[in-house]
Image (cartoon, rainbow, N blue to C red; front, side, top):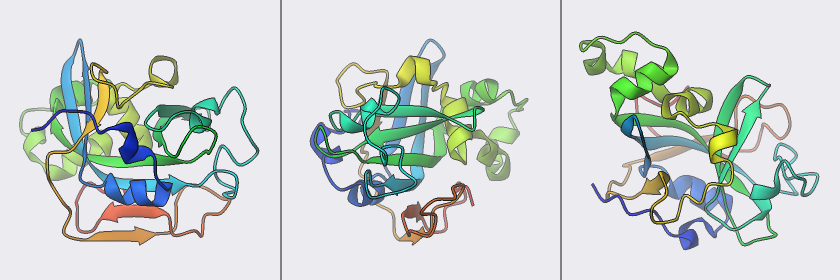
Length: 205
């Protein structure tokens, strides 16, 4: 598996383009627990000032400054005061936009993911796709499984060599990409900005 981080230029594009291009790429984290990785199977694009659902819609603040920074930075926020969600900033500095990572198909580090999620998995569970879905199908589960918090990873440069959180390309290309309206939000929810690998069992819905 190629583990070189995707370059900043990959993310310096319209979030709608990046959201589709990220499908099939691999999210990787390395820490004291070892290596955890998963293939990205579901994303959502957020467009900045013209998108009422985007955190950048009202302009730059201390909370959302990462969205206005260089492309390829982790933007981690706390959803409803309960769960962390991982986004990646897009576009050039000053032009806000991002992609939310909604779900991954676990590839490595299953046991570490299960522990982080507080799940009691047996060896048999790791061979059961329905059980594996509990690890990282959904943005909150994904962050929990990978141990991603705002305090530790907000602003992390995921394109940097030596980063312990990055996205790589192993050459995999989805056969078919589908799209739908976004879910879990109320503003601009009707926009068709959720993208996923059609037929993949690890898509959140």
